[in-house]
Amino acid sequence: MASPDRPVRPPRPQHELTVVSTEQVGPHLVRVVLTGDSLADFGAADHTDAYVKLQFTDAEGAPLTRTYTVRSIDRAARRLTIDFVTHGDVGYAGPWAQQAKGGDRIVATGPGSGYASDPQAAWHLLAGDLSALPAIAAALEAMPAQAQGVALLEVESEGDVIPLRSPEGVEVRWLTNPGADAAFLARAVDAVDWREAVQVFAHGERESIKAVRRVLKARGVPREAISISGYWARGRTEDAFQAEKRTPIGQID
Image (cartoon, rainbow, N blue to C red; front, side, top):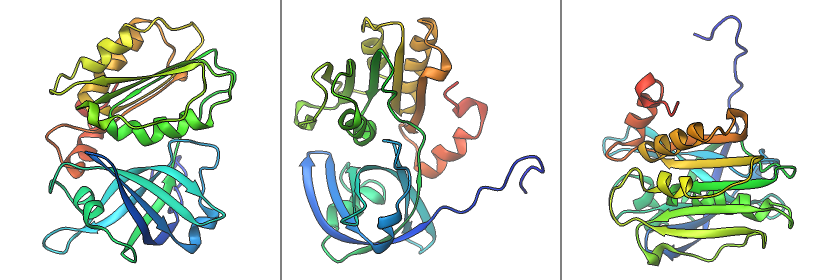
């Protein structure tokens, strides 16, 4: 039951989508382009971290959802692009993306969103793993030409590196972490010499992002300048991960 002093959030729009095309853009990344009439009114126009919840069913036919960041949206053409991180036949969404073909159908709800790069920020720091790549790539493309900063992208191998468009003043660094070192990204963040008026976008694996948060706190970055959250947790399904996020031990800060 909703709290009496908290407004009830209206349900997010539902979109009935059809697969237009798929593309293997990296060894662990499949791009799926979807279409649907309702995409003409797709929200989150001012944010670059829009996400949707895709609806699947498990082996017993029970419904489940998986959350994915929107790589790009073309409202005029009614085209929605999502990049799926894949690891063989693990999970539901990744295998679906690998097997998807033109004409396949899927239902999505959303979007949700919350981040947009501040054109007045003196410097931008973006950090994350492959799960954060769509949002980081979209943010880089939306930044003004004069933007300054660095994007730190953690990948398992050099094969995961793909071309990105970014302002000339924003350096893109690909960082190879073949293991499960949860402090890897945080060390890279701490090694950056950023300016005082920095805006931060840091998302990815939960324990990794917790370590990044500790670095940001130690270096005095104000909370209002930070967009940070765990997109997933190593060794957890999304259902278990989302449940843990609602408990203190599962929260980033």
